Structure formats: structure tokens, C-alpha cells
Image 1 (cartoon, one colour):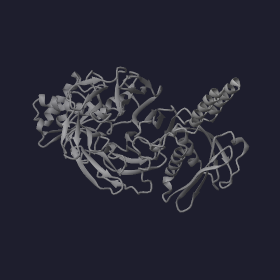
Image 2: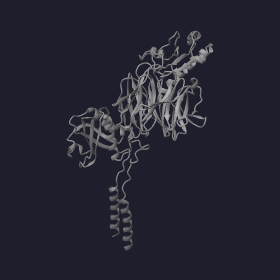
Image 3: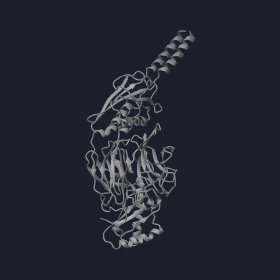
Image 4: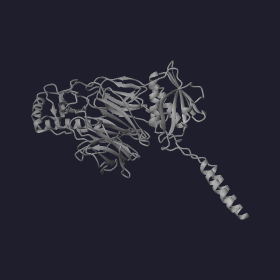
Length: 412
Length: 171
């Protein structure tokens, strides 16, 4: 009898193990297939769907094109081994519409369905981004809201002329916001992406302006002889870090947008630029040549002491920060002319671990997404540029060619 | 016997109550900053046309001035450039009104650092002109970074031509 009880007890334990749910974590990626039920297939849309699922880091998406009626519940046998099927139907009539159904592959049960529509046909990519964002959310993966956001960038056109544009993260949708003149260094002013700061060279003195992208209303924030750039905005939007040069000496200043007062943060008489807030905003990282070459340093806003933050590389001239992590671009070849290699590194200022994010080519302009999970960067090879994304959690990466003229600065 | 049964039953109850819990859900928080629906993709954005840059549409020195050139990554006036500084100082003494001193770079490196480098070059020229007796209050400096190349071919000589300071009358 005793042994029978022990046997029953043991069987209970195994039964418990078998019924436990597996929690979703970043290591588990759902295998999905996309099934097109559109009357006319749209290759561009399909490519964006694949990119969105891939860069989320949460899905292993079958890149084959499957077609089937949108409304039916039939799933071809070869897809039964997937976890989910995403059925979609794209129509273009008085605007664009994307309908999706998320089905479980094993039994075709429907988990989610939604329709996305917009009048402006050029904004089709945003329908896809919203759909993938929702599917990701329904399946209870960590938020990927960054794929819905605008990227803001400036590019040169002719000498002393540039334009500032918005795009979606794939650069499929692009819209010029400011054209004419020389307007540079655009930087989002708020997390809702309603306004941005930029540097205008319209007058004798470089001026920092703020413009609302929906109304076009514009106002001047500050100006400085020589140069003025807004390099970062505090998380509550009330303060900005500026690179300014009164008297021709480029240094970092912090400006309160409520009072208009400016506080000088760096005092070295060489080059101090690109201040970025760390953590809760009491400290910054920045680029300086105070050791005789461009490198990354750290400083509390309230105190004079400066500490070196990066101890590798002889030319680290771009940095971005998220929490206590920094990403920087390091020049790794010493050709004075042409063909230099720039690679990106991710470093923690707490604990000090550093790892390379790229290994070849010219990779610059590193930028964290607003949630710190993805790095955006520009890869230059010869005359052409691509925009790259690296998902830090899954190490998935994507490149989108952006062709055309040279990008001057970028924010997202 | 009865004691063993009671113990077994008690243990079973404990184990079964454990089975009733559902696994915690992840990812429902909407991300740290909850930006998920921030982009108003339905809103129409503007396109604004701005005026051209103030004066100086040329991208080299003008008005009798001569450009000063710099080594890669450098903003010091070399011995060879001193001759040009002297020529510019002598030209400056002949003109009334303000003089615009514009710093430029080649295309390497990224955004802000390059603009600061251009500015340091402009400042070096301003200081050197001051050392030759020019009234520096009539000098305005600005950096155009890499926005104002005189050439665009990927060659050593083109890069060297872009690493320069231009001077012209301010208009």
C-alpha cells in the first residue's frame, strides 16, 4: 500500500510538469507563415511585413509566398507545422486597406482580426507596422512600438542647401518637411513626435528653431555665433543639451526651456560636442578631443569632474545613450583619405562590458530606439548608403538601401 | 496506514493547488515609455519652404580673400599657410564692414564633431588674423561642416580641397 501511494505521488509530479505553461521570453520565437489573400499581390507590402516580423526579434517568419482565400479557414498541410498563420488582404481603392487574421496553425482557430485603412496611399507602410505591432501585442511579446514611429533626418542637396524629411523606419515612406536653405541636425522635441528642433543657417548667426510638423508653426529657441546644435532632450522635454560656440569655442550647454537660462557644462578649450543624457538626466556622455583625439567622456552636470568612458579605439566621434548603456562609432583604420572602417560598439557604463555590433564597413550615426531595444545606424559603402537596425535582444539585423544624397543627421 | 494516507492526501492537495496557477504573462506593460500609439499616422504633416542661406552663395573665398587649408583632423595653421593668412590680413585692412570666416571639413566623421572641427578652423584663422593686426570685432565666424564641398570626387586631392576656411565680405 505504501509503495502504491509513493507511485501515485510520483505520477502526480510528472503530471504537474506536463501541464505547466511555457512562458514567452526573448529566446522563444514564434514560427509563422504569411498567407496572401489579396486579389493583386503587392511585393513592397510583403517585404515590409517580413522586415517587421524579423526585426521585432520575436518571430521566425517563413519568407515564402503562400496564397489562399482570405476568409477561409483552410490551412495547407505544409503549414500545419508552424505555430501561427497570418492571413492578409491588401486593397487599394480610395486609399489603402490592410486586413489581417491571426490563426493558430494547428487547428485554424482565429486569435485576432483587424482592418487598417488610410487615405494617403503613400502611408501604406504604417498600416503594416501597426498590424505587426498588434499581432506582437496579442501574442504577449514585449512591446515593439518603435516600429510605428517616424524617423527624422536631414540630407544635403546642393552646397549650403539641405532638406529635412520624415520617413517610416524602412524608408519606404518619405516626406519632406523643410526644404530650401541650410537646415540641419533635426531632433525630436517630444515623445509624441509633434515637433522637432533643428539648426537654421538662414541668417548670419546659426539659430535653433522648433517647428510643429502638423501646423508648420515655428519659433526660435536660441542662437549662437559659429554653430548651435540640439544634441539631446531630457525625458520630460523640459531641458535640452546644446552644442554652442560663443566666441567660437564649441562646448556643451544645458538649457531650461521654461526659463530660457543656459548653463555651461564643459569648459575644455578644444572640441566638446554631442552631449547625451544618461539615466535620470543628472549625468551626460559626450565626445571630446581633450586627450588629443576624439573619445567619449562622462560628466555630472552639476560638477566639474570628467571621466573617460571608453578605453578602446583612437577616434570615437559619435555616441548615443540609453539608461546606463552607450553606443558609439569607432574609426578603426587610419587611412587619412578614403575607405575607413567605422564600427559600432555597445558598452555598459555600469560593469563596463563592451561588445561590437558591427564588424565591417563604415557604420556611423548610432541611435537607440526610444525603448533602448534597437540600434539604428547608417552604413556607407562607396557612394551608396543603407539604414541599418540591430535588435539588441535577438541580434537580428536588417539593412534598407536609402540611395540618393548623403544623410547629414538622423533621429527617431 | 491511516497516517500515511492522510499525509499523502495533504501533500496531494498542496500539489494540486499549485497546478491551478496560470503562468504569468509577459509583455503586457506596453514598453517603458508606452509610445505605442504615439504616431498619428492619419495626421497630415506640412512641407515648409525656407529661404536660401544668407549671402555668400559661392563655396570658396571671394572679395579678394584667399582660402586657408588644413591637415586631416587638424585645426592649426601650418607654416605653409601663414603666407595666406598674411595676404588675407592685408586684404582685411582694405575693407570696411564685416568679414565672414567660414570653416569647412572633408566628408569623414559624423555630424557634430565635424561641424565643431570646421568652427575651430574658422576660429584659428580669426585668431591668426588678429595676431597680424586685424580688428577681430569685424570678423564673424561660422562652421559649414561638410555641407559646402568645392568638389565631390573620392580622391585625396578633393578631400584636401574641402578641409579649408573661406573668407568673404559679410552681406
